[in-house]
Structures are given as C-alpha cells and as structure tokens.
Length: 294
Image 1 (spheres, rainbow, N blue to C red):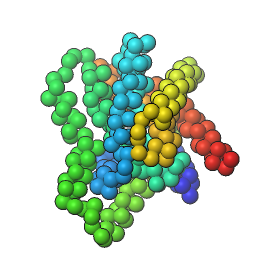
Image 2 (tube, one colour):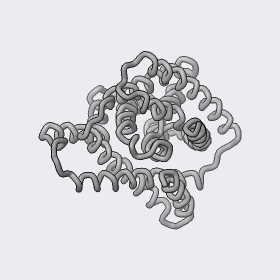
Image 3 (cartoon, rainbow, N blue to C red):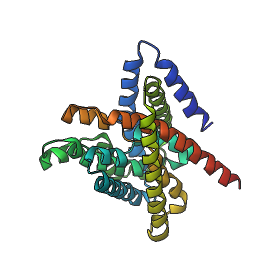
Image 4 (cartoon, rainbow, N blue to C red):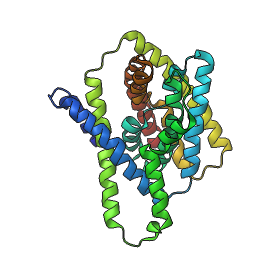
C-alpha cells in the first residue's frame, strides 16, 4: 500500500495533465503541498520531537553547502552549482521517502527538508541574482518561508506544553491526512509536469553524469557521517540521508532564474534531472528491497 498510493497519484497526474484544468490543478496542488501539507507535518514532528532531528537538519544544510561549492569550483557557474546542491525535497523527496521507508520516516525527512529549505532560501536567490542583495532582504525571505514559519509555530506550541497533552487524537488525524495529502499531491504534480516535458538525449546524458557524481558524493559523505558523526539513531536514518543525493534540482530554481536573469536555462536540467532521478530512486528502492530480504 505504501508504494501503491504514490503510484496511483503519479498516474492520476498523468491523466489530469490532459484536462483543461491541468494548469490550475498543478498550481493548486503545488500550493497546498508547500503552504499546507508540509508545514503541518513539520509542526507535528517538531512539537513531538524525536532524537536526532537537529543533527539531521544540520547534516542537510552542511551537505548542500558543500555540494554547492564543490560543483562551483569545477564548473565556475553558480546556477549549475545550485542545480547540483538544491534538491527537490517537497514534490519528490517526501513522496519518495514515504514510498521507500514508510510513514515512520517522516520525522527524519522533515528535519532534512528544513535544513535543505534554509539553504535554498539563503543561497538560491543570491546564486541567480546578478546584483548583490542586502542581508535584510535575504533574512526576510528566510523568515517568511513556510518551513521557517512552521518551525516557529512548533517552538511556540512546545513552549506551551502541547507535547505533554495526554489526548491529541484530533491532531493525529490532521497529521495523518497531511501526510497522505503530501504524498499524493507531490506525485500528482510530478505526473502532470512530466506529461508535457520534452528533453533531449544530450540533456539526459548530462543529467546522468551529474547524478553519478552526486551519488558518489553521497556515498562518501554518508559513509563519513555514519562513521564519525554522533547522530542519534543514525542506523535508522542513513538510508533516507542517502536519498538526498538521489533527488533532482528543486523546481523553483527556474522560477528564480527567470525572475532575476530573464532566462530559463535551468529548466532542461530540472526536467532531465527529474527523469533520471525517478530511475535512480527506483533502482535504489529495488536494492533496499533486495538487501532487506537477504
């Protein structure tokens, strides 16, 4: 059932992409995902905090920074470096993680998402902007981002002792509905997006090479983290930590590029990267299943 629901959502997206309401539905699902479902999941998991969440936030943020400057060193292109380091955690990260590891992985994925989101809001705009931006602008963007607002709400709820409530059945129901909505809307948007996406063989080949490089980085960084970092329950989290390196560039990079540079070069990287990522995650899921059986 864990794998069936995302698959059905993806197929629904493919079918809905042919309807006259496709554009509105894609925008609506994307907005619900970013402004409703994910913030609810963040608030719940931060209120009912699990050991290791802060470490995972830090891991996600630091890894993104390292990947950005690693790729920037060789490519000397900030936009390419951003596509390499800022990954699509919202549309694809959550649905893929739940499909591969089950809903029990949600707290870890939330922590990883927050770290990646903070990186995205700090680095994305500065990477695509052709003029230096004031610190106040960047700070405002970070503080007004839905994940950060959700994190602030979680701190407030914890300060008033919501985590100690003996009865929170209604909260649990809302949380379960948000997890379902998050997985369904993310995969549905992916289906609608890929239905009308056209990529060239050269783009797929370039994205394949980039994916292999990122997977190699993931193997090294996750291996070092597992060996040397004292992250609580890392044995349970290492699989989803590696999933970060299987994900494609964040979809909102092209929107930022268009706004600040008037170009859309990253669109082909995002489209081809998403297709390659689906293949990579499928292989990763198969390997997880094989080793679980063994």
